[in-house]
Length: 401
Ligand code: PMP
Image 1 (spheres, rainbow, N blue to C red):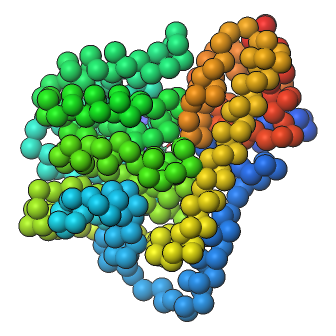
Image 2 (spheres, helix red, strand yellow):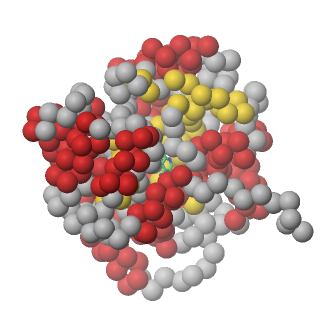
C-alpha cells in the first residue's frame, strides 16, 4: 500500500540534536535546541512551576474532560497577560480565546480559522527568515504563503526598509504574521518606533495582523515590555489574531500549554467566533490537556506565585543577556575575531543569528564538536560559564579559517 511513499527529509533542527547525541567528545556543545538550559547546562523546571504543581496536586483534582476551548480560568488569565487589564476589547468582552496545544497548536487553529472564515484572499506574509514550522503550518491549513523582507545580511540587523516596502506592496487585506517579540531565528526585533510605523502600514493597507507571541517575558525579562507590539496594535484599533505559548516563559515545553485569541468587534461577534472555533477544534483533538493549563493558571491567578514566576522569567532572560555580553566581549575585545560582533549583544531572546556561514558551522561541528543549525543560529541558552570560552575560541578559529 505504501510502496509509493517517498522518504521525507529529516527535521533540520532535530537533526542537529541527533548529531550531537552521537558525538562522544566531552567538550561537545548543543546550540541547536530551542529550550532553556540553566547555568550548568541542564533543563530547568521553574520553582514557581513546582509550587503550582504541589498546589494542583493538593487540591485532588479529577481527570474529567475540559470543554473544547479549555480551562476558562486559564484562558481568561492568559488573555490578561497578553492584552493587559486596560485592554479595551478585553474590557468589552470582545476577545474570543481558546486553550491550545502550545504555540504550534494556537497557530494551527488560527490558520484553520482564517482558511475557513477570512473574507478576503487567503494569502499570508511571513518574515524571511522565520521559524521553520510557520511555513508548513500555514500551507497545510490551505493558505498561500509569501515572504516579506526581515533580515539584512550586511548589517546582521533588521531590513526595515525592505520590510516596509514589502508590506506596502502586498495586496490589500493580506494576512501578515508578526513575531511579537524575540524573533526566531534572528533575535532581531523592531524598535517601539518601528512597531508604530508597521502598525500604520498595516492600517493603511488593511492588512490583517497575526501575532505569534512565543516568548512573552523571555525576551526582556518583563512581560509588559514584551507585549508592547500586541498592545500597541490593539491601542491603534486593529483587530488581531494572537498565538501564545507557555513553553518558554514557564518552561512548560512538553506540557503543551498555549492559547489562541481573536479580537472581535463586539461581544455578539465574539460569541459567533467562539462557536466557530469550537467547530474547528472538535474534530481536530476534541479538547485540550488539563495538567499544564492547571499549572499555568495557578501561577497566573496566585499573586505570590505570579511575582515569583516573574522574577524567574527575568532570571532566565538575564542569564541569556549575560551570555550575550560575555560572548561579545570575548569575540570583539579579547580575541579580536575578524568582523563586527555587536549584533550578539543587541539581539534578543533565546536565539542569536551569529552571521556564521554554513561551511563555518560544518567546521565547528567536525573540529570543535559544536552543533548549531547551518544558518548560523545558536541558542544562547546552551552557553554557560563552563563552555563559553571554548565556544568563543572555536568560533574565532573557524572565522579565521
Ligand atoms: N513560534 C515561534 C516563533 C517559536 O519559536 C516556537 C517554538 N520554537 C513556537 C511558535 C511554538 O512552540 P510551542 O508549540 O512549543 O509552543
